Amino acid sequence: MPEITLDATPRLNGLYSRRKTEVDALLAKYPDRRSATMPLLWLVQEEDGWISPESQIEVAAIVGATPAQVNEVVSFYQMYNRAPVGKYVLGICGTLPCALCAADGLYEFLSGKLGIGWGDTTADGLFTIQRRECLGACSEAPVMLVNRKLETRLTRARIDRIIEECRAGQREPYFTGHRPQS
Amino acid sequence: MTTDAKTTYKPILTDGITGTILSGRTETLADYRAKGGYEGLRRALETMTPEQAIDMVKDANVRGRGGAGFPAGAKWSFIPKDRKKPHYVCVNADESEPGTFSNRPVLEQRPHLLIEGAAICAYATLAETVIIYIRKEYYDAHAQVRRAIDEAYAAGLLGRGVMGSDFNLDVIVQPGAGAYICGEETALIESLEGKRGYPRLRPPFPAIQGVYMCPTVINNVETLSIVAEIFRRGVEWFKSLGTEKSPGMTVYSISGCVAKPGNYELPLGVTMRELIYEYAGGIRDGNKFKAVFPGGSSVPMLFEDELDVVMDFDGPRKYGTFLGSTGIIVMDETVCMTWAAANLMHFYWDESCGQCTPCREGTNWMYKILKRLEAGQGRPGDVELLESIVKHIVGRSICALGEFATGSLARTIPRFRTEFQAHIDQQKCPFKKEYTVLK
Image 1 (tube, rainbow over the protein chains, first blue to last red):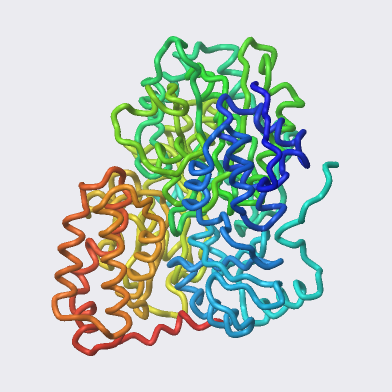
Image 2 (image 1 turned 90 degrees about the horizontal axis):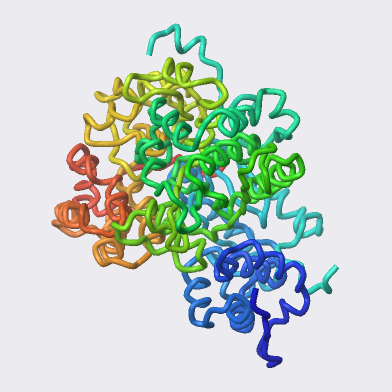
């Protein structure tokens, strides 16, 4: 595998210097390095919660693509956040099977409770509401993803509890921040 | 289906899976081997040539469970018999069709069943790499499949010299990032090459130029799980289930306005009426049935007088619709068809990759019209305009998504024309829509 050399410009995200072992292992799996683009973007998002322009430049350098090619990917896939998000990302399923089981009401309730709309983040930086399409859990409707956890058969009471748990810091945050490589 | 077959059938693919789709417990390698797990792969490696393995899948007439019903054996036989380039097997675990949730429990709770089926497919098609593309929303599935792969490597079921043979196999798990279109096989290929999920023009087909322009087989999770069972239990067993042209079983996902939504694994050939009234407990709240999507939201609906349709690969075709993903979405009399179509059109508008005009613009136009009908701002001629757009999309897009977007309208407008028209005449939606209120 060709050596990866990254220019030491201040515009890089620093992913490679922090997590070299992990990134190298990922690259080694693929016959073509560019296939690591999406997994690397997920690494970035797990650290930062979103994909900054700096991290796009860095991922491009790692996989041997241009920043524009990586930006094409980031802007195509809905789960990559192109702006910072809250500590808890609430991904409400809005598609028909959930909509037949009060998904619209779920959004209205949550939006009223938190005072924000689709794609917004609360002023305290805790919550972001996102619309997800069918989450493949239709028999348990209505559902939403709270960060990486699927919450099912939601009611007003259940949502109140989930929000309380988040506010009390009892749930895993959406992103970890930068940590030195373990 | 005969009453006998119904009462005696015990789930195979979803064997041991808990009632709800959410993970109770995941089958470990030891659990799976206690059920005869990986004996099908051993049989292939020790007693068959790759060619014979393909013949076995052909004999069983396994039709793809991902939506198109294409015979898996034929698909595998298109792969070149030499290895001028590396060959690949891709597992389509991007399950994103609205109303479809039958792959999720297999991924989360029986990952070894899928890995065994994929390994058999790789052996038969001379591939040494399997790539399992799982939608990112399935976080638990990612974790469980990765765990199962680690177990399989440690036990010598993957890696160099699988089960002591000279067959080598690596398995990679690849994440999506929330794009429905990546369930389309050529979009999936583009995506795992690190690009936007734009479907490719065919030919060339993936069997000749797939991942990295190399020969590639792409199969759905359920299809490969079925293959693993056939290599363990035999072709005769498989063909003893289902109907003549649609042998075997499938997992029907039933959602919407029914009393007992869920996954129901049954031999192919049960009727829609049986699925709704005998398995899913009938319509909820004592309401009357109105309409149903038989195979995900991308296929035209079926109506009251069509409920005796046989739910195998050929039955729904008689009504101009399809078995599709066997994601059955039931709607009762209180559901507004315009509202349902508007909801789904948001989905297709959102998920259209934007590559070709009929789909990109067509979904946008249809979404705008349906939204204004629901908002009480419908204009005279809107219903006819919708029909005209439907006609101009079908058959004119690179992939099937354009046509899929018309599933909620194609048969529905002619059947419920007065209901659509009422939105214009009354300048409001005439339905109460109590199902939108959260408890």
